[in-house]
Image 1 (cartoon, rainbow over the protein chains, first blue to last red):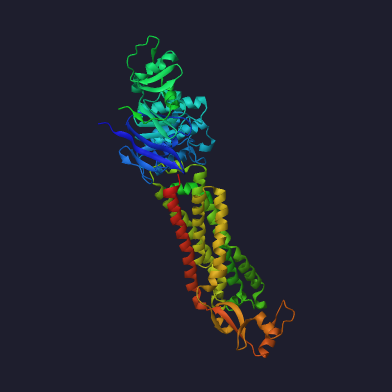
Image 2: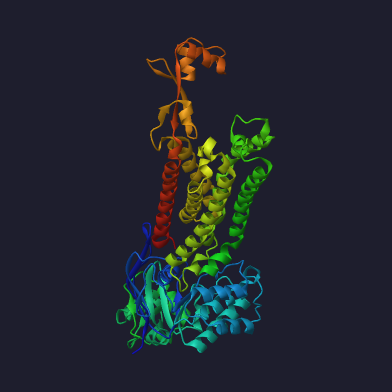
Length: 288
Length: 306
């Protein structure tokens, strides 16, 4: 039986009168690399903050690795890196490692030191003197040294330059290969996640739009391309996700009898864009 | 966790320790030098307003030191501003609480450790200052009474410092900005301290009326005059007697005239033996305020802050 890494039920968080996230029900099996995508303000950070206990849910339930997450729960098996890779800037890298050792019951000094040595980051340098990319690597090393079963990263590369971005993604991929832990990372750029992730969660305006295994999603969805004049007739026989000019995104394509229409595979970016531009409809989730 | 608290606050702890130790050393050395310079039977007189030439300038030193002691709550403010205010506000401002509170230590334990460690430091340092001040002032305890040194005596002074520290922590939790927390800690601390010192402290117990000689060693609050029909302050007694001469200053001449007219002088005072009761009451007030700050801080950290 595979463990469920993340399970939410009707999870919601309200800020004043506005909902940052609402009615989010998810189930993600362990061992996945989950890409959380959506435009700014979609509710990605809200969801992640609730996962790591930095934000209280207004309603609903949230379980990580089978444990209910409350405001004061200690998540020994979960590591989190926020958007700014927040670390103590006045600490030396070595002291940051010591902090990690003191603040966690699970800690592997070797994992942290090996990673930092491999990237040429000196332990005697102050965190505040490191480049953004190096700081991200330190944050990752400190997180991985706690040997997490679930690693949560909020926009891990958003603040980095292109080279550091590439290095961070590579570091994440190697972390995935070495540890096999579940990774959740958010981004508003789909292409960044495409190579790393095998599970996709699309959020928009505080609502869950799509969640599922990426390969299954790509297999299920097809883009139908043909003349606009007959689009309505073609759409009638299909499960249409989104109706764009000259194309229909459908789920589970059925035979088309109009020879003017072609069936095309859909790429991930198009799929996400189509889901983001559609009007809100109830959640669809594939069985993983 | 202890290591974290020390590593993060060592600079502030060091600065505050320097300030407190400086004050403690000053009173300790002054006490030693006065004991060395003056014979034991002369020494108590030099703490009195009516000191003679045998004090050799020490009376002036005593007077100035007691006047400057009014400024010693600055030490408490230092504890609030350097140790208290940044404790949570700096984490929020630099967003490092997002690191600290997602590790394997619950945020309530994290807060608890820091409060205990830094609070104990504040108590230790302020008790040292109090002890040194009490050592310096001890020779005058019998003759002058302790009320002149009320604010610097333990347990009041340590309780005041602890309150200032915890008020700083609470302000930091409330406003999440170091500068705002520092400003409001200072303002809030004075808003509590000044009324307590000037209004409440005189009224912990109802004052006693009596002759000046009986009030020796106690805290004289008012010289009052009575002609049998009513009680007057010096000024209103002079008016009643039609003696309002210069209007601004009165001396023993006017008081003598009043007595000649049948006015009797008495004092309203707090007896000397109430000193420790008053200490406990005032220390209780500040400890209570400190406890409220702790409770509110824990509430904010547990439910509001993210």
